Structures are given as C-alpha cells and as structure tokens.
Length: 254
Image (tube, rainbow, N blue to C red; front, side, top):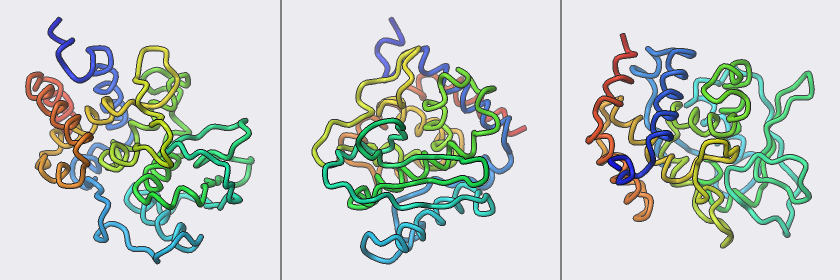
C-alpha cells in the first residue's frame, strides 16, 4: 500500500536500483561519481550547424559519443532515406518493420553502424534521445546478458544505461510526442514487458542519478517541460521518502 502512492511501484524501483548498481560496478564507478555530468540540451553541450544536413547530424553524434566516453569507439553514422510516410516514434530501435524507424543499431560483422531518420532532426532533443539510446546499445553489447533481466530486458537496460551516462534529462524530455503520434513510452514498464522505459520510470531514474551525484534538482527542472517536471518532482519526493535507495547507490563510490 505504501508503494502504491509513489510514482513507480516497488518492483520497478528495485529494478532501476539494481540496474544502476550493475552499471556502476560493470563500468567505472570513479567515472560515474567524479566525471559523468547531467547532459543538458544547450549550446554548452551541443554546438552544430543549423539545419538537418548529415554534417549537422554527425557533429551532434560526435558530441553524444564524447559525453558518453565513447569517442574512440569505432562507429559509423548513416542517414536513412527520407520517408514522408514515416510516423516518428522517438527512441525506437525496431527492425523488421515496413516503416523506417527513427534509429537502428547494427553490426555486420565488421562495422558498427547507427542509422537515423532525417525527419527526427525536426525535434533536436528527441534526436539526441535517439542517439544516446542507440549508443547505449553499443555500450552494453558485450555485457548485456549479465545485466538485471538479461537479454530479454535489453531495451529497458539500454534506456537506463543512457540515463547512467548522463542523458536522463534528454531521455525524459526527448521522449515526447513527435508528429502528433502517441508517445511510445506512455504504456508503462511492467515485469515481462520488453518495450521501453515509461516516462515515469525515466523520471525516477533521472531523480536517482541527480540525487546519487548531489546535483541540484533545479538544474534538471530548468530544462523540463511542465508535464515532465511534474513527473520528476514526484520521483524526487519518492526518493526522499526512501533515502536508503540513494544511500545504497552512493555507497558504491567506495
């Protein structure tokens, strides 16, 4: 009953905590606690030519890679053919469908590639959201079977890895409706659901990131829309009622 009054349920909160703990242990705790920043959608973090050219996309891609500590990871960005009939649903990485997805992470045995829909560049934050998600696939590729939930939960863990890498605010805000179509993240996260993190779970994950790194919540609130700010505030209240969650993550700093 106590958990029912919170933004996410106990199972979801436990999975997020376990996922964060696994990411910190698997990768570099010192980097997470001492170097990883909350990435904001500002010119301080992203400077690129105006427009939707591939050159502009490449600059943004390279900046996302740098912020995720992956600048020296071999990866090619490929522009998809524009599809005027594509219904953009941000952050998706769906293969085997007729319509072009917004982004695909792929490996042909020789080259890692990430493809993107140029239509998504009409929504810059959503474009950054997609890039961070697809690069998180690359980050996890060698270890994902050992993550909480294993391979079956790889999309959920991929979203969480992007939050862990500093892109939580962009993941939350970038998961908004594009072209008037339903937000792909509003269906919610449940045990056994192989989709993507809901906005509520993203807000909870962002709040855990902010509190575990002693970042002022106002920093995030300044760049969130009213609906996403409401979720983030609710997540902050939840974690303040359950400080033991944050304390356990902080303890991983050693």
